[in-house]
Length: 237
Image (tube, rainbow, N blue to C red; front, side, top):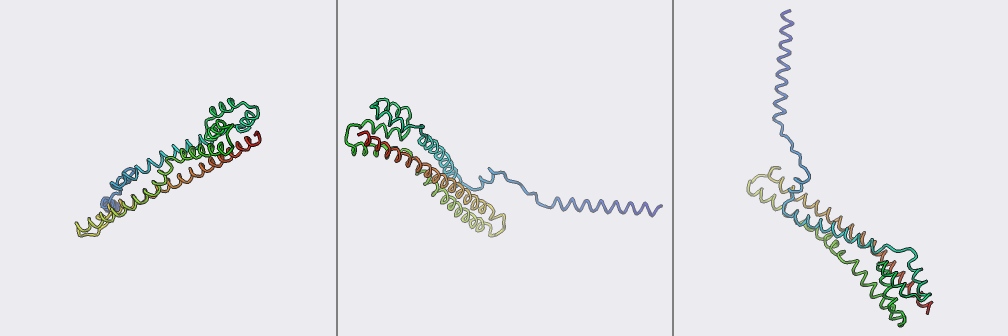
């Protein structure tokens, strides 16, 4: 009986010792701190400020131009057919009123042509072309900003990479040590700014070309409507 009790006591002591060892090992291991997205971005350094500005400009002007181009691309059903009927019935005031209420680049082109009816066809055609060019220039406004952001943002990221490398070598020179703790802050700045610059650049580049695709469709519709209007005048004449 005594031997059995001694065996139980020794087993408990061994288990207690093992538990203490495990606790010591766990305490000795460094705790890993998790970073949220904002803290990670802040480690990118001061170069993140212009990158943030570029991202704001890219998003703002993308949606601003997207709304403007979508408004320009809308078209009233049978608009040109109604214009043709009004011209054939010599109801120019009704045709002009329809253009004003429609209020699209196509309608403004046609309205300018209606105002020139009675003059030579070549003069009417030139007036329509001038209005078309003006409308296209209005739609292209601010698109260049997206193109500029698409080029500048990756360059800012590259500048941040250079600044991170400089910071790494500066910290090494101060401490005369190449431990991961010394170079980590510079590596954070280097990688975060590079990634942020590339992401903003890709977004701006994609948005710029997407809007240009939509704009090309509007331009094609304007050219097609201008040709159709001139055909109506020539047939009516």
